[in-house]
Image: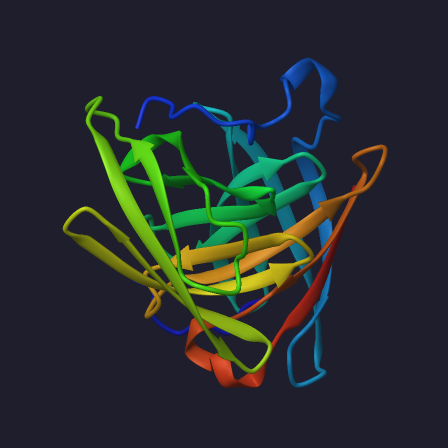
Length: 217
């Protein structure tokens, strides 16, 4: 992953919630990272997964090209991440299941927030409702624009609009914001938690497509 040059609420009623800790396989630990860049070249490094307050996760990547980090949300067997060099990351993941449900968090707001939409597709613009950390409800709108294997995601919450990069994985859309400095990544967690396999993209090389990465401990 890792050719990035410069990188810089309360709960709305919904069914889309992270698994309880006691029922989820443990993924905290140090992993060997083996990956492939979009151009086919390979790399090796190390990824350390830690749990943050508010049911969030952080991955610190020690790679030959530098040290990177990811802010991640867990959705059952998927770890959805926004990654970069700094601590100005917002990550969001929306699931298409009947309606559209979403989770998001940001470095500046250390908690997980939820959205819910009556719209039923991630492929068309959809509207959702959520509640902020201040207890004030908000309405959001999300639209996506295909960009090769990626999606350019525009997300408006009240008066704030964010543009980021997204990756589709089945019924999930995983996105990292802001688009100029944060990439998107996701990992599928193995049954015993000793391996995670996923895809990632670099915002500075979005046209190059997706890279792959396996974390093993």
